[in-house]
Length: 331
Image (cartoon, rainbow, N blue to C red; front, side, top):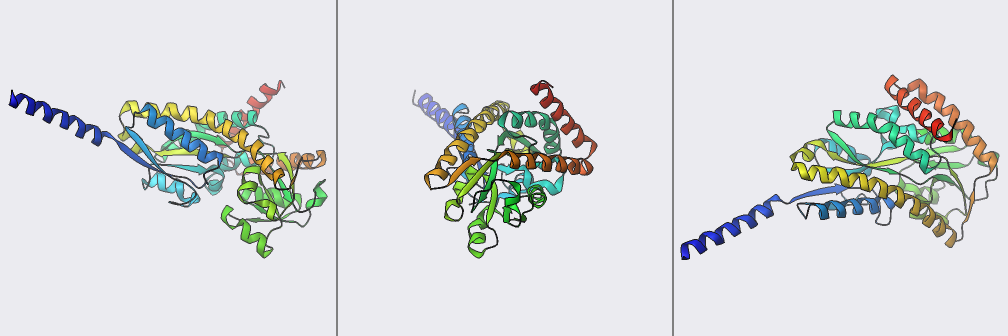
């Protein structure tokens, strides 16, 4: 009887040891602070996966550039340095025109169009990332954007000569066509650039305006919508394949739910951060018709330029998107 009890106890201990060994912990890197809608999305995704997996897959979230600088996260995931991370597509425009398609002014000027663009781009990006050993789990459209200025901007002429901070080659081109002296600067350098006089205006979202406490330097925000750039949560394919099949499916399904959550978080952030700007004394308005007309004109010019550098496969994605958009608009 004692031998049976001993064997039983050993079996229970072995099961416990197996359960411990079966738990996998993934380190996840993002570049955004706690109150960002992107961090909210990451936390929602993590909670979903941990609950559905009953703790078999857990995450160690390192946000706000505390582990890996944001622009280096894609490389870190691809190389296997980390299994999962959040990236911004526009950072990688030098790798292909598709990465900056959503940076063309007015290509997707509201959330419905942003979702259509994701639908059109998804097969292309899934194939591209798979060929480089990665998988996209979550799609995250940013809130629309606008111009932050010291004085009210009522028409495009008010932009002439202003020193504009932007964040990509596409928005640099947009700024130049609108008459700004545009400079690409990372998020972390914005405050210092104001202090040194390098910039005196911004083109970005209400989220970023709030994150940088823009009210310390500027007083007016003219919201254009204009573009809804994308982020994504990506995973190393080798790490993904090492998981049990049911865990793989949990990740895929949680990613689909997180994509919907990201859109909701983004919409909420847009509204809430505009309120934050107002609470700090800023004037927040919809951009004037003349500014919107200028954005439309610039967008068409940049789309023509984009077509000249795009591959046939990339052109097919744009044409598919414009077809979907026309169908939705009833044209």
